[in-house]
Image (cartoon, rainbow, N blue to C red):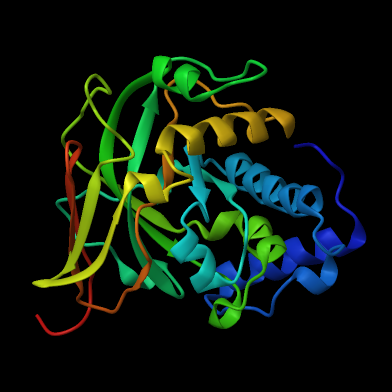
Length: 267
């Protein structure tokens, strides 16, 4: 992921960086990049990541986006993508998430993989992912687009670090032994209301398939998955808008549960 930035890609990076710094969403960046050029979009993402790590942030994993057909339909895209997780994106489950850190937050429940070995070989498949997984946990990802009104195509979201925002991991660690990942059922509540449901099969048919896709794609782009990284494998159900004061809880059968509450609203 060391592709030099073209003039258009450099402007896309500037636009997205300004949106983050000014806390104000920006117009789409797809007009600045060749249509459908994912390598150019990943180069923008990589340049932003490099700037963040140069400033002291640490890469702790990756997130896979757009694995669920319902989410693809919601956002008008037709293929998965991935972004980078940094240490300051992780939010403790016992503390409120500062909604002021986000611009247009939405939330989704998914299964997070913690890797015990590198996944950098050719032909990585689901069995290789399973062998490289130390454990899985339930996770809530707070996705957040820097593009105004979530007016995104695949190039926009890739350049925008796959619309990554923040995330919360559950406390229960579960090995894969005896776990039917496609059959895991997810229920997401906002307060007492069920707002999203799904299963592991909605994540590219199996979260292991999603992580294998990520391993191959990241390797091809020169940034393979490494031991110790956390991988958010993709939404198990539709994403849900977040408002100040919201409280969410997700349960994933066989995996565990996870909760997040947001600042603001009525005490």
